[in-house]
Amino acid sequence: MLLTSKRLIALSVAALALASCASRNDAPADIGDDDVYCRQHGVVVGSPEYVACRKDRDVQRSNAITRANRAQRNLGEYMMRNPERP
Image 1 (spheres, rainbow, N blue to C red):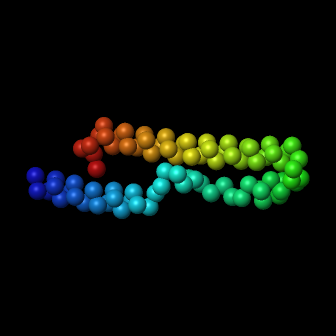
Image 2 (cartoon, rainbow, N blue to C red; image 1 turned 90 degrees about the vertical axis):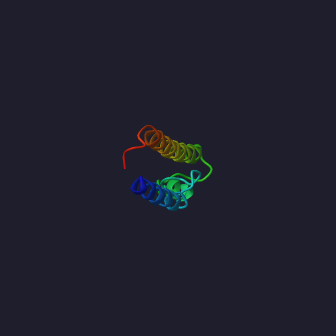
Image 3 (tube, helix red, strand yellow; image 1 turned 90 degrees about the horizontal axis):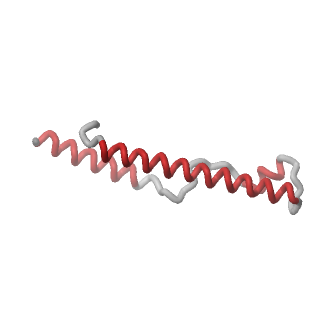
């Protein structure tokens, strides 16, 4: 019983330390500056192609955030279902 309590305390401290490093609102991957990206691909600022390029980048960022949130939620659910596993 004492060993289990020590493990639980150690796990709690580790979880708190890791949780302080992450924020759910941060972009999971830095995909760079959208303006620079679109200009490097030869798109003129103000053109319909530029607007489409910027929208595509927004969709990519949104999808990356959604994937990261889903992975975090799945991990939490897995941990809740399997509390005995280290």
